Image (cartoon, helix red, strand yellow):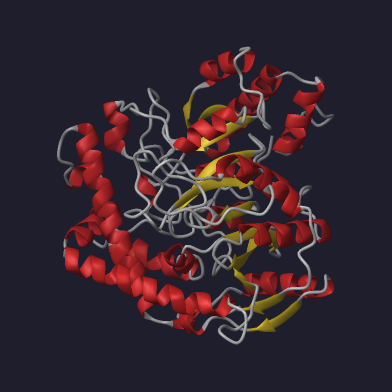
Length: 490
């Protein structure tokens, strides 16, 4: 412990913790016990870890069977949305699943990869119901509080994971992103949040990439090197995967350490379609990052894909998101062996699912086709000239405003759409790249005048997760963020 009572392990990233285990300076059980102590001491203030498996974790950490992977003995948390482990509870933020005490019947490929890497899962983190909104305030578990200011949202839907990492409970945690759900809480909580390319990480065996193509699985981290090393663990095709992103030329950890060369970067500080104002602090964050890039030898100019302003992109996303909500509600009804009714879910969930159920199959497929055509138009901006515009990266703010108060997205009685409409100005930049399948990353490059984290958002061409990580590593070295800690911290 430090002189101020803080656990010094709380300031280490996962790579450093793994090095301590490898050198024999600490044991896996000591790492796990320290993380459990941090959760028990700090989490009552933020409510990030809603399902705990502490005794299982201690047994795994003490076992000779703990895999000798690159993160052997490092404590970890899994978002309570997807990424199941057979025989263990999972609720996806739903009261109905919580009340039923539902246990997963299979283990996902990603959960197995985490286990084989030597990670020790301490439990599951809070998620909004079915991951549908950009905050983490499910009726099932109550709100998660932002460690920087507990009155504010940590973002969503990976808000529980982000709050836990930001508060130093663990060094990184599983997360997922269907419309910004890794990048939004990464910005709100001052973390690194990489949304990987579609098909980079398998979602099998029970989930389908072709039906649930908006969402990807990965993590939120404090350091770029942790993101790269964890991607080396998580990435790769599994048998039967229908979408597989191009493999990197070398391990991500190695590629991240290489200078990316001089890049051409487009800067965009207004909302796509200019549909809502962007908070000055968010604009400042992006402009500051642009100047830093120029100082590193990159060329930055005001530019973005023309198709990014296409009004139809929001309508396409809304249609697909509603159908996804309907499928998720129906799937949980099958798992619980009963038809879910309006009282089983939150008002916003029911409205989204109802809208999705009203979409004809022909309209859904027509929307998917329009999305693919639009995604091709977007991708041309990243293509070399003369075919495309020849840009390597797009730089925007991550969010349209700093973290907002808890309750901002809670709809008033009788108007369940109000909270959903309020989400638009908060998240104008992120959803489009769930439509295109491109990789994107949020970096904690700025703090507001009142000390809140403000993220910047980089988008690469499809498959160029390596380039995003290399640039992120450059920026982390030029403007370090590791020593910034929130008000609530272990």
